[in-house]
Structures are given as structure tokens and as C-alpha cells.
Image 1: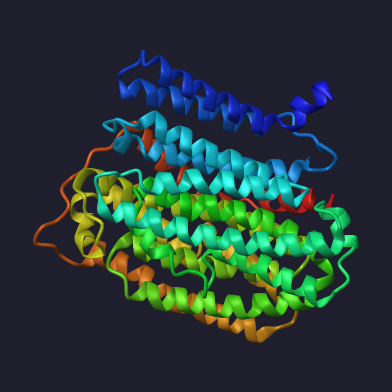
Image 2: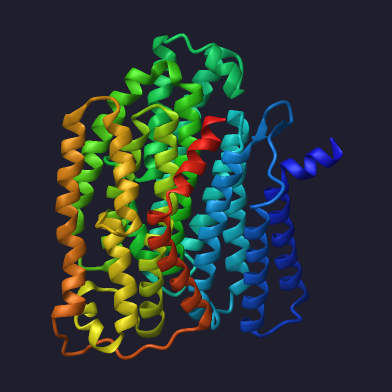
Length: 469
């Protein structure tokens, strides 16, 4: 198993090595300068990102508990890309933080858990990855130890995550009891449609809906996003959700393929509730992190719309959209992170007149919001177009009309922020802000991604080709 073990588990082993390097730096305590530590960490994360483009093979280990292929390697590297951008954006916040290394150790432990979850071919591996990705994340939410809101947010996340994990585990246990196996491939052969298996599927579906913040299992999301540090909020909004979508595709399309009619109907109801309630509640928000929380809830609804196709096209459109969503959401969060770190301001009303003092930041935030709204020529337009096209393949035009009408509603609350930045005045405006080269590079990367991923059709074609293999 020697060479094969190292090539197949390349991503997980490299990430584990980085975690051990950071642990060594913490125990050694020889480097006191946070700036140096940030440069070291970002270099390691960049190497980790580059490694995801090379030596990707297909195969399985541990009797099918772990498996990988080119699609799964791509999914992991999307998470690597998002984590690297978040790290660059956190520079101004972390350079004065006394627990910098602890932040990265916890962050990379959650990422490692997501990698194992994505590559799981067995419910035991899936659940271990799920817990590894969740528990350190709750600690990250509470990383601002001096703030009561941060502690409250962490407590809400722990309770909701424990509840969701318990529901999921109960469903898994019933599936194991009726099939006698935890292996995805073998279990799929024993799904007979019995009432107990049907109930187990509903429980597992509910667990995923909790993790995705799909309505009506979204109630924890806004409070957690508001209380967490901005960098952790962006990680929750992008990386955590993307990892759950990736494994959700595997579970729906592989394990529960025989339940397609049922999960389509469940997705239909979930999508209608998620995009509608997410949009309506986003309109009411003044805190910009809560605003983006409900925005992300709405975006989940559109991702699920693509998955209703039940085909490779549906999976391709979801993965493609998540690439676009990574650039778009992190572009917005990058601006918010800088303003929060420098001024402590997090309300939408504080952004009035931002263009007068910070025109570059205003344009970055505007383009990101345009992409999230699906306004051409940004990549968000093309991403949502593919999702809607995939969903329309089932011929359920009622669902498509509801989704499109909600896109129109979303224009109101996204453009409300743009209007405030460009056209309104502020008696106490945000002053001219200076940012680190790391943050500038991250924002430029996001802007290139928002534009390039829309106009270069090769990315979607490549994803579709990989899934079709």
C-alpha cells in the first residue's frame, strides 16, 4: 500500500503535516513576531493549494472507507483556495492577535475533517469527518474570548450542531440495522424502500439541512454569523457549506438514488422555503454579517435547485456555482473584515458614503454583491443560469418561476447596500482605510475570479467532463 497510500491521501497528509509544523512552532515559541508567523502560514497554505493541481489519482483505501478521484480532488482544492483567501484576508486582524497559531491549527483541523468527509465511502468515515470539521469550528466561533456575543454564538452552534449530528447518527444507525453495512456502495444495493429506511433517509436529510442552514433548519445561522469573528463567519459561509454540498451530492446521487422521486419532492419544498424566507429576512437586516447570513441561506436554495436535476449536469452546475460563490462571498467578506478590524463597524448604515472615502473597497464590495445577485456580466449570473437550467430539466416550471422571482427580490436588498455606499451621506463616515498587501492580493484574486469564471466556459466544461468520466 506504500506509494499508493501517499498519492491517494496526498491532500490529507499534507494538511496534517502543516498542522504539525504549526504545533511545533507553538511549542517551540521561538518566533514572537506575528507578521513572520503569518507569512510562514500563508506560504504553507499556498503550497497546499498548488499541490492540489498535481498528482491527482483515483482509488480507494481501507476496504472502501476512503476513496478519491479527480472530482473529489477538485472539490478539496476549491476548499483549499477558499481557506487560502480567508487567511490572506485575516492578516490585519491576526497580526495583533495573541492566539494566531491556535486559530490556524483549529481552522486546518476543520478543513482536514471536511477532506475525510468528502472522501468517505463509508458512514463511519463520514461521521468522523463530520465531527472533526464541526467541533474545532465551534471553538473558532468563540475565538473572540472577550466578547459575550462570540460566546453566545459558539453555544448556539454547539447545541444546534449536536442536535443535527444526533439526528444524522440516528438515521445512520437505522440504515445499518436494515442493511447490515456502512459502506455506501453496498448499502445502496440493500435500499429496499422499507418504512424504516424511509424514516432513516428523512433523518439524514434533516441533518444535512441543518448543516446547510436550509429553511426551516436555519435558525442558528444569523446569530452565529453575527457573533463570530468576520474571518470565521466567511469560513462558515463558504468553506463549511461547500463541503456539506459536496458530500450531499454523493449521498443523494449514489446512496439514495432509488429515492429520487421522494428527495426531489423534499428538495422542492426546501428550495421554496429557503430562497423565499432567506430573501425576506435579508431585507430586514441592518448588521451586515446577519445580512450575508440570510444571503447565504438564499444561495443554498439555488444550489439545491441545481441538485434537483439528479444528473451529472446538476452536480456540475452546483460545483461550478460554489467556485463562483467562493470568489463572490469572500470578496464581500474581505471588505467587511477590513472595516471591522480597523473601525469595529458592522452595520449597513455605517457604509453610507463609503465611496467618498474608500472608492476601491466600494467597487470590490459592489462587484461581489452584483455577482451574488446574479447580475451580468459577473460570474454569478452564469452560475445561477446553469443552476436554473439544471433544475428546469425536470420540467417543473413552478419551481423555476419561484426561484427566478426570488432572484428579482434579492436585487432589492443587494442594491440597497450599493445605493448606501454610492448615493447616501454619512455624518460619521468610515475614514480612509489602508490595508496590507495580503488583503489587497486576496481582493484582487476574488475580483479576477468573479469576472474570469463567468467568461471562461472552460471551467464548467472541465467539471462536467470530470463528472462524466
